[in-house]
Length: 329
Image 1 (cartoon, rainbow, N blue to C red):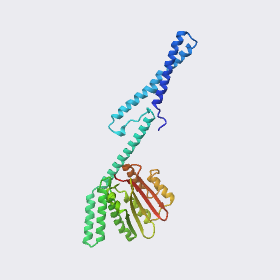
Image 2 (cartoon, one colour):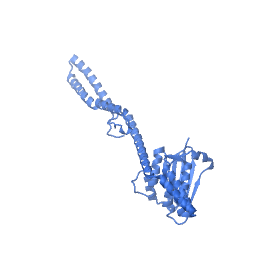
Image 3 (cartoon, rainbow, N blue to C red):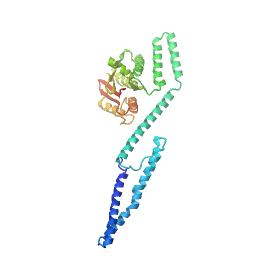
Image 4 (tube, rainbow, N blue to C red):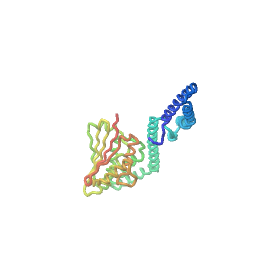
């Protein structure tokens, strides 16, 4: 809690004590006047001092109280949460904690709305004319089939399918099955570049298949991670490379581990990547951290900070990215 925020409750206690002293002083003054005791003058000074607290009470207690009451009334009638007035004083410590929690919630809500608007804008920007893109790819596919170029036709078809999922599908979350199908499409396209050098393995318990199908995942969670695995891991090494996606259901979570047997990362690079994912480092540090930081941020916005991802890597051995997501009830 911010230290400069004072508690009106504390001030109220102070003034209650002061007015208790005033009341007792006035009683003593009356008694001293009646009996002409030698304590008359000191008690009179105490009484005057207590009375002098009245204007201080107005400026330091009642006026802030009235102002905060007015702010609360304004907050209750504010149509937009972003326009809520910030309190100048806290009534008490509990009220301060409540305001801080409310501010954190509003900040998270604003971040989600901003991220959503940016994503919608980028999607619209990318969708200049998706039908033109799909029709062009279909035309190339048709020409390739006529010319007997089956591999080119298949690649065009896979690319069109990938773009339909990436651009045209506006859903925030998709099923695990849909995300895996998109990864298979993406991998199919990449194999035209790498050939048999590149392989994909998807591992899960058959008994969990029905539950896995019902699990929800942010769209385009796996593709950026798999792309990083290929570009920063497998492509950098000699020989064959593989990417393994392992799905595991626990009582509360869906755990997804994307592993590659590429070149891996040095400890200092790994630390920078994890710092970027956690939002603790400025842009431009580490490698392969931008896309997966975006994925981690979307997971936090959709499901909360309890879930997210972390990267493990050993130089010369490969990299693992572990994602935790909520399991549906």
